[in-house]
Length: 125
Length: 125
Image 1: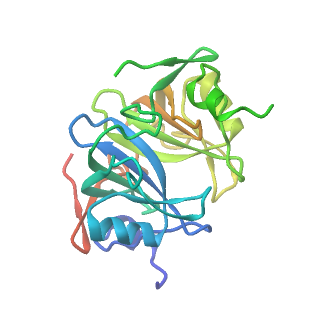
Image 2: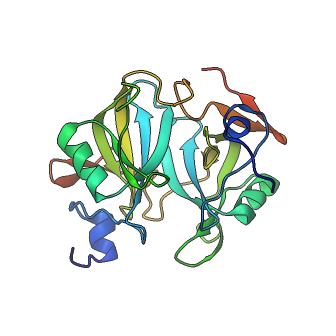
């Protein structure tokens, strides 16, 4: 990849994903119907390519050090409707249709608690 | 901080933020009125503490290696209404009221482009 200027990256129409020193960028999955954030994870170049090829969200698992098709064991895939890119192209917003709960705990979204003083409260949703 | 079990972290009501090897967690700012994602950045323990103390979103700038009060130069602060925590507590959702455009480019949100085939298109918003 050639070096892109800040202006190219921020104002241009060329997709120039900026992976960090670990080869990762942030990917936030948002429910296309409710606009709720469902989950956030990392993508490397391979995960991004697989996501674009298949239309199903793939991530890079930092703990397992490998490609991870979301839903590969649970069947709860995230079908990607649209990919949005932030100003400096180091983060993506995936607008998705979830096929089941997005969280491995069974919750619809991973963000099922809010900070309430010093403790966490369950958010009804 | 003592080691917390996965069950404590995922199902409990104790706030046990999990910073990564770089001492960071992901913080996603969402507009309380529109539910649009405004920006995403990293927080270290100091940024999280300052955010909770002041009610204004603070982040940790990886490029500058220091605490960053969002809006300190532009005046475009993000007033934090609620902090949500994800299942494994390594990411936060900040539900905010933005005081002006959240993006340094002047856009309301940093996610102002979508991937359209091989190029980026401006999203009207």
